Image (tube, rainbow, N blue to C red; front, side):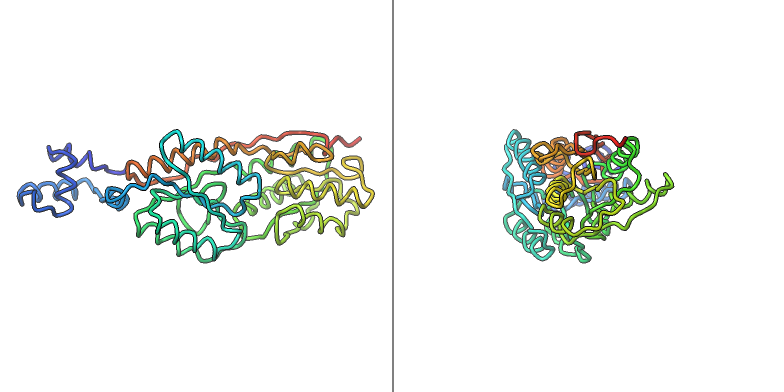
Length: 335
């Protein structure tokens, strides 16, 4: 368990303010007291937190949020829920979109530091990002940050996200129980953590069930148009169900299949992920996986507020938030 400044103060028999002054070399603290406090700090293994010092110098009452695509209702809902949570605590939310560009995300991080945000929530880009060294600047500036919805796996940093692996497995198990065996999958770029989790779940489930694995189709984007254009020319011979990594892609697949004269679910079933509004306004109501976006946003907002207010260190990620499969007409049942 991390040693806190209160622990040092209690052991040394002084106030936390005195500990802070002593460890920062303030001349108001006599040498004997300073030596005693430093000895206690060393004995307990106390490490001063750079966040606390930084935040003591200025209070912007601003929390930053970076999302890849604000037009995506998944991210706009995340932003709205986080905003609602922060407003009740007297903080404002500064929202920026990286437009799925690592370069843009780098620039925004620099801007957030310049604007003296007290904490930062980052929804990573949905493209491969091999160099995330720019995030080290946040540590140097004493600004705590958390990942939300996904993470950059090369960084051992805390994240708040739903259990995407388990959610995809639950969806595939539901389709399997409905009689589907030959399932194709439309995903985003490989080497992106949130997509890799779902891809791995797909491969693992088919292997565990002894089913034939079709090649995962890694599209350049995960918007409606990306899947719509792909499915217009997709080889669907023998495919019983198409599984997409979000509802926008599933909607694009349904409309492309319809234009080809194929019925959903009578000829080919389609399933999505996220349980967005698209799952309910689709021409055929979508079977999907519900992510608790509200719960994720609230948990992330509360956590970053704790870090911003108390200068505490984020020690570890919390357990992923469970997903729920929502069955609708787009998957039907095989005879």
